[in-house]
Length: 230
Picture 1 (cartoon, rainbow, N blue to C red):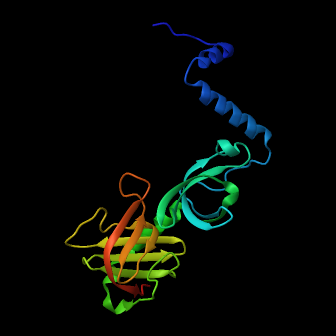
Picture 2 (cartoon, rainbow, N blue to C red):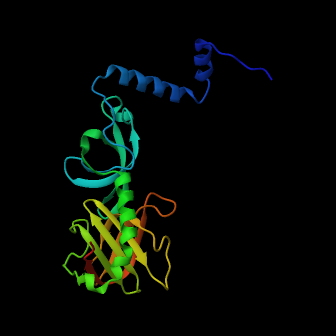
C-alpha cells in the first residue's frame, strides 16, 4: 500500500476534486470571520437551556437543541445562533437559526430540571395522602401559567398524573394499573400542557423514543387536585 503525502498546496489540490471542498471553505470562512469580528464573544447559552425568546412580535419559551458558534450561514460571524424546540400555536416545533439577540432570558438549565425530576420522584408517595389534597378547578385548568406547586389530575380512563411546577420547570409522573404507557411511574419533563376538566388533556413531553418530543392526548379529564406537600 502506498501512503500519499501532501504539501499544503497539494492538499488543497486534492480537496479541489473531493467532497471536502465545501466543508473546507466553510471552515476557513468561519475561522476568518470570527478572528476579525471583535463583537463575537463566548456563547451565552448552551444546549439543554430553557429560554425565553422573541422574534419581536411574540414571546416564546423553548429548549436549546443546537448551538451554532459564529451563527448560521445567513448571519455568519455577526452573532451566535441556536435551534430551539418550542410549542407554537399548540404544536411542537423546532425553530432554526434563532439569533442570540432574540433570546431574552435563561429560565433553567438541564441540570436544574434533572434536580426537579429527582425531587418529584422523592415526593411521589405523598400524593396518595388524601388529607393533603384540595380540588383545584379553575376554568383554565392546568397550563403554562399555573402557579408553582404540586397537582394531580385524573382522566376518565383511570390514569392519574402527578405534576410538579417550580418556575419554568414542570414534571409529571403517570400512574395507571390497567393501561400501561411508556415510562409509567417515571418522572418526565413537561414542555407544554393544557389540562381542562371535561376535555381531553394535551401534553408535550420530553422525547420518550425517537423524535424531538412526545405528544399525548389523554382521555377526558375528570378532576384536578392541588396537593399540599412539605
